[in-house]
Length: 208
View 1 (cartoon, helix red, strand yellow):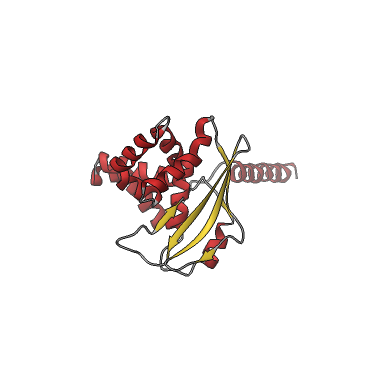
View 2: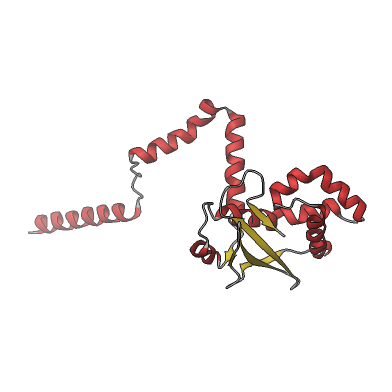
């Protein structure tokens, strides 16, 4: 009888030990083919693409991640109302780029300039300015720079919002208003125009 009890106790101890092992010791992760191929590609891509190309891709991915840290409130309202051919993020990502770094760079580049100097700066950089903001005249650019004087203070944005009920349809462009609030309670209000078609001779997005 004692021998049987000993076997029972031994069996219970072994069973409990196995249960503890199964619960506590982590199981090796099983990878499916897609996961394996993905991880293998991460290891091999420098050999396939070259370190310089991999670095460019990683930089691009990081910029995209940083870009989408800028949340635009009521953005879905634009998705539901815009009826043109362009992807809506064509406009909203330009807003994100400007809020993240573009406005500050424009202010720094033109800080302290008089009207003549500002006109000269525009003429020298009008292709980049048009690509970034859609503005194509010196007067439009000067008006934007005037609004950006709020950057004289050290400020950071706290909220970006598409103003509700501001969406309007026009002839070639739809337009809506955005409002950017900063940590000193100052605001920057702008109108964004987004074309219905991909024009070849005029900007598809204008922010002013």
